[in-house]
Each structure stands twice: as C-alpha cells, then as structure tokens.
Length: 544
Image (cartoon, rainbow, N blue to C red; front, side, top):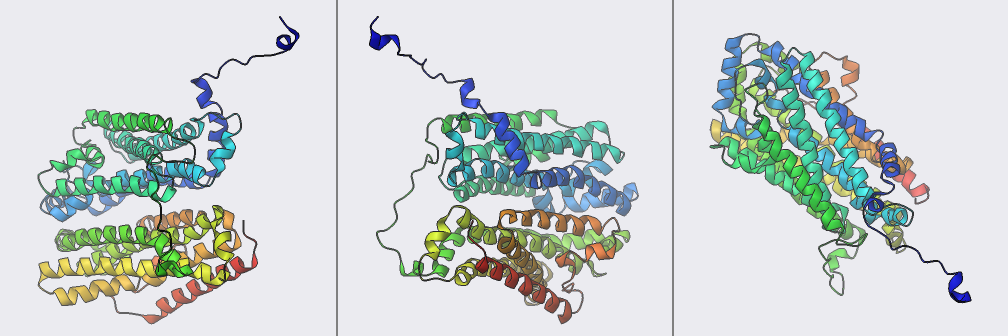
C-alpha cells in the first residue's frame, strides 16, 4: 500500500431503491402545510354535500308514489340521464343521490389539480430542482403528492359514508357510495400523475388530465342517454354502475383501483426516463420572429389564454345543450309535486317552474364562469411566480397595461361563456317548445345578468393578487364557500344575511321575474372598486 493510496477513501456506488423515496415524509408535511386551506375545503365539501341531497329529497318526495313518478320522469328523459346518469331503483337512497352523480367528476377535478400543483408546478417554477439538490429522493415529491391526494380522497369517502348513514340510509349503500367516491379520486390522481410527466408546462399537464376527464364524462353522458354501452368505457360510468343502495356491484371498485394502480405505476416509470424539469414530449421550436399579434401585452395575453377559453367554451356549449334538453322534462317532473315549488322558490326561482329551472341552471353555470375567471386572473400570479413578468415589464409597458391585458380576458371570458350557454339552452328548449326566438332571448338575458356577479369574484381575485399575492389561490376557497352557501344554505333555511354574501343571489331572476337595474349596478360598482384596489396595489408593490 502506497502513501497515495493509504489515505484514499472509496464511496460505495449509489443504489436505487429506498434512497429514491428519501424525504417523502418531510415533503408530505410541507404539502400539508401549503394545502392547509384548500385540502380541508374539498375534503369537507365532497364528504358532506351528498348528504344534503338525501335531506332535500325526503322533504320534497314524501310518498312512495312521488318517488315512482320522479324515477319515471328521469328514465323517460335522455337529457336528464346524460346530465346525472340513470336511476336503478325507486327507493329514497338511489333517487336522492341521483343528482350527486357529478360529484365523482368533481372530486376528480380536485385530485387532478392537487397532484399537478405539487408535481409539475414545482418543476416548472424550479422549486423541485432546488429541493432535489438536498437529500431528497427522486420520487419523493411524486409520492408525497399522491399520498396527500389519496388520503384526502379516502377521508372524503369515509366522511361521506358516515354522513349518508346518519341520514337513515343503509350502511351497505352508504359504504358503497363513499368507497366509489374515494375510488374516483384515487383513479384520477393517478391520471394526473401520469399527465404531469408528459409536458414541461403545468397548464398542458392540466389540459391533458382534464381533457381525459371531459372525454370520460362525454362517454358516460352519451352512453347513459342511449343504451348504456359507452358508459362502460368511462371511469365515471363505472362509478354510476356501482348502484349504491340498489343491489350494489362491489366488483366495480376493481377497475377503479386497477386504473389507479396502473396510472400510478406508469407515472413512476415515465418519471424514471426523464430529467427534472423536462417532459417526455419535446417542446416545438417557435418561429424565428414573433407574429404581429404578439407585439403587445394584449397579444401575449391572448396567446396564453386562448387555449383555456376555447376549452371552457366547448364545455359550456355542451352543458347548455344538455340543460336545454332537460328544461321541458324537469318542468313536467316538478309539476307533478307541488311541494317542489317551495324548494325552487327558496333556491331563487319563481312559480314558473321551467323558467325557474333555467335560472338555476344558469346560476350554476355562472359559478363555473367564475371558476374560469379566477383561473384566467391567476395567470398573473403564475407569470410572476415564474419570474417571466420581470422580462415583460422590462420593455416599454406599464404595470397597469400588463395587468389589464390578462384581467380583460378574465372579464370578457365569463360573458362569452355564459352567452354561449344561454344560446345553447335557448335553441334546444325553444325547438322543443316551438318558440326558438323567444326562448333564446329569455335564456341569453338570464345568462348575461349573471355576468356582473361573476365579475365580483374577478375583482376579489385581482384585489387579493394586488394586496397579498402569496394568498391569491385563496380565491378558489372563497368561490367554494359561496357555492356551498348558495346551494346548501337555500335548502336548509340559512339566514338571509348569510346568503346575501353570495353575489349570485342578487341578479334579477330572469326569465320569470322582471329585470331590475339596481342589483346589477351595485354588483358592477363592487366589482369595479375591487378591480381598482387590486390594480393600484399591484402598481405600488414590489414583484415577488
């Protein structure tokens, strides 16, 4: 042994395995802290809200004859089956949870956004690379994100089953519905994890996962409106086919869990074949020179916003077509039970039940338009967090002009979405009623009066971004609380002052009620004040 070799130490070669998952617990605690507001909100919402459908259905349909007529109306309407799915029994359990069928898709949206926020967004912003430079394993971030989302889905399912059982429903059916809800969350979390490995951009990853969800919803809707074959090609169709409270099919959980396992395994495999910050799909090189449309801030904002606006417009068009086809059927169904009139009136409708249903349908769409508006406004937050805004503002552009370029689409987008939905509802409903021109005017008018209410949420998001940019995503929690207050508070008799905090309750209840300008003007004034506060605060503060 020579002197040169005596003091030399040889390190053992690095081994894969447990080291790839080192630090998972630390990252999980970090993600829990960051999601300490959003995660409990969606867990609580999906765990508790389905039980409210049981209470409201018991109140409205008090006799077995009412339940039979209710089920027959659903079975005879392809539009209603497409929106919510079929019914498999005339008992209170399956009928009360019929309208809760969309919760399988809603929890999918929550899990998709959660997984991508803690995986692809972390890589896009460079935080994952900084964390990876420490003693954190390669798969720790993905494992922590999937663990967080999986635990949230399981808690939602357990809470939902407990709430349903507390409403005097059978333990078997309650457990079946809760297990299916959790299974849907787990399956789509795996889809999101796999989508996060494909592209370098979080928006594209969200688009891939949400596009897959939209395809699954379309297959389920078309299948349930027809002979039901296409529904079996959709994970959302599998959830409906569990048939909770109607001779449950427990084996339906197997394809859901298999999908979760396969997509999760594929996500780990794909992640092992790429570098941090990269994607499996190579980015296309751009043209050597920018097009004239990109010469200004508005052109850049349009380039960034156009994809999501197109996708949302298609979704609103399809949902408007479904709603328009369901108006006449719902009107016939409601006419058979006089007690429904009181519930519809408490939800903001009128004694003209078909017009009340249009108003309720468009109010639901207004909440969706508010979600788009918040998403469009949050583009400002994403650009600042990724430090691209500094490059943009280094040119001859003011902060106000830059902010307004994105806020303009957050204001224009909801108006376009609601108009598209109103036109779809009016055309389909008018064709079935023989008065296309009149019904289109009614539906479009009912849609446009909701735009100022949506703009209040836009202004609130801009104000939070200007004053407290770190907490801008809290706008999603505000919207969730408002939706719960409106749809649940109106049913359980919440105080009016509490309901008045929701902007969607204030516009005129068109097409049944007459138009009143005062509420619309007040909403416009509040939205304008919030926008002004946010823009002024953004101009005066430092960039993060």
